[in-house]
Amino acid sequence: MKKILFTILAVYFAQTFADTPEEWITRANSVIKKEIRASSNTIRSAYSLGSLQEASAILDSALERFPYRIDIWLGQVQLNGEMENCKEQVKYFEKIHDLLKTKKDKCELAGGRKIDNADKLLEGEFTIAARKHFEVENDPCYEMLARQMFKFLPNSVESLNAMSVVHMLQKSDSAIVYLERAHKLYPSDCIVIHNIVEFYKRKGNKKKHEEYTMKEALMCKQK
Image 1 (cartoon, rainbow, N blue to C red):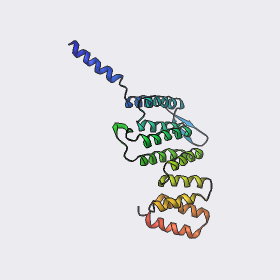
Image 2 (cartoon, rainbow, N blue to C red):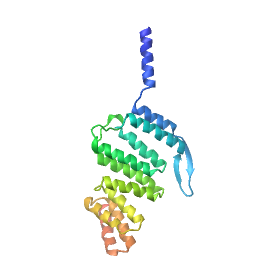
Image 3 (cartoon, helix red, strand yellow):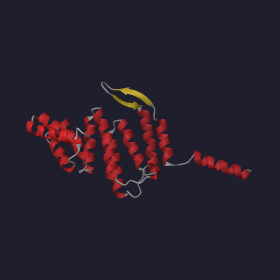
Image 4 (cartoon, helix red, strand yellow):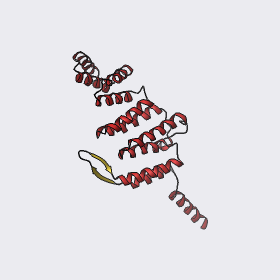
């Protein structure tokens, strides 16, 4: 009877104090508290700054023990995005990129999933993070992430398009350089084609505008 009781207690304490990535993630999630923080014209975040900072500190501790859990690194990117701390996002993306480049065989996501296509993962996460800044018109942060994405993924349609948006926001004609390169690499990408249409419309280039408007009608409207 004593042996059975001891075994039950051992299992209980092992479960209660289990030091696993999932437990650290649960701890971080549990401290995040919702609120509405409004700026002059936009709602920036639905979470309190203090709880986001506390959650980020918990994830930093988790990463000291589980440095190859890429989903936790990406969680830090998301948390710092909520805090509009794009400089920290850049640092975390730098670390993620370095790990995927040098230790990819050790890296994994939740559930022990291995990462087959590191570039695709980075492209998707950069796009999500940058878009969040774009939606609240935080142009400096959008540009910071767009430039880093392009540095890591120079042949990605998402990075090329993001760089074109950076230049369009600055009203620079250099936007078309990135759009044309993206269109050459990915001729059927409708977002790129639409942005080319918009670029030539703004420039008043009727010939080019009509050319790409026709391409958009033929290739994209039916999708």
